[in-house]
Image (cartoon, rainbow over all chains, first blue to last red; front, top):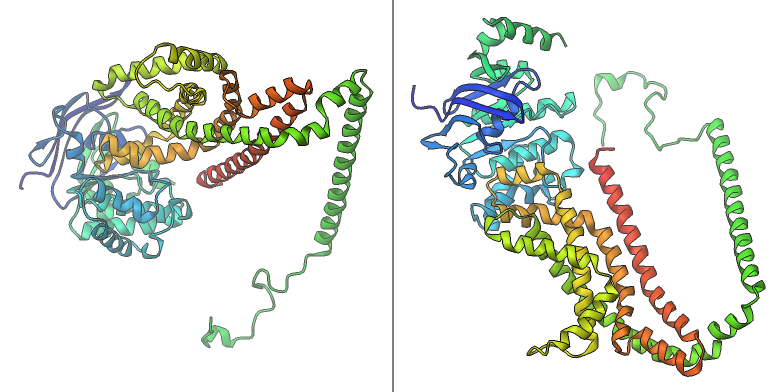
Length: 246
Length: 304
């Protein structure tokens, strides 16, 4: 196998006195979808935030390609341009229209001319089924539409790596599908995705790798099929039975 | 929409069941009775409100008129002829108040914004400026505005620096800007801090720099959040332009004072007061409306 796109080694992170990530080793190869599963508070979100440099790690390394993201000498803004993140709570900018939300980073950060940025934004919106929402403000959209707009915003800068932080957890059940369809489409297009999720069904269908996090370490890691249907670790089995019972 | 004849539709239509809302809807007798009750209740309430207000005004009026000094107050403060005679002069003085208000407002916004931005940024090179801004806010919020008008009005010219303005109204504006700049700076800073940290994260995650994040994401939301309190400060500023009277420029209060001293009648003060009210009441209503709209928006965003 070639060099992984994302390589995490010995990642440690605590919030105050609470040790959230004890020691994480994880590789994400290009064009792969890797799902992080685990109970709430198991460190999935923190792991993603550390990769996007929104949290400063306590120890260990994160490499994106040949770049060490955890190097404090690195310009975080430059590194972040290569990564897109979508949050559980969408976090769209409420004072900007959907179109402006999407074109903000291309225009401000990548200096793409307005016309060109809006053209690609409209293409993105059409692909995500939001063609008629370009000029609406986020508060006029349903949760599913907002989350798809947030995905469009993250895609607009053409990142090498996408991070999805429980992007369906805040959605009504009937809206989860429309967002997961978008993720499946991104997988088809060969994007590299690291996502924290509670959607076991989706993970089984779409993920190349599934990692089960508990107590700040990856307890079990393998193909989706193996981890979800034939877990080797007792704690994975207990977690899955708890989740699937619901 | 035109209906296609399908197998289901060929069957006899089901009675009512899926009547479209708004069409041929008549409130049930129960609902009609409820609405009748609500109408009578509403009528009764507005009667009570009107009667109580009238009674209150009557009582206050009667108390004022019955007070032992009423005749004196009436002739000293409510002299119709004096009012008509002095109002034009006070009004032309009031234009200077408006002028001071408009100029000060722009400068205050600029100064306040600068102070707020300096205080929220974390650039290490700005540490001395940050300290200066904090000191400025601490000092100028603590000094009474009237005292500041005296200090600037008489102190600044005494320095005899090159280019120091000497016109009293300009000195007055400087004092007002210094005083209100500190307040507005704090309001704007509160606004900047009121924007949810997730917004900053989202912007930084897109690769926006600190400055771009502040300008494109944080500041627009901050200003929107603090617009009502900001307007409140400007209403107060509009009134406080009268403090400049102590420096002697012919603004409304000063003119009224001259007229009052001349005729030994205080009615001109009432005229000046009415002029200030004529400006502040519409401003206040406007601020109220903004506040209401902000509240509605907050509810909408909360998904209520």
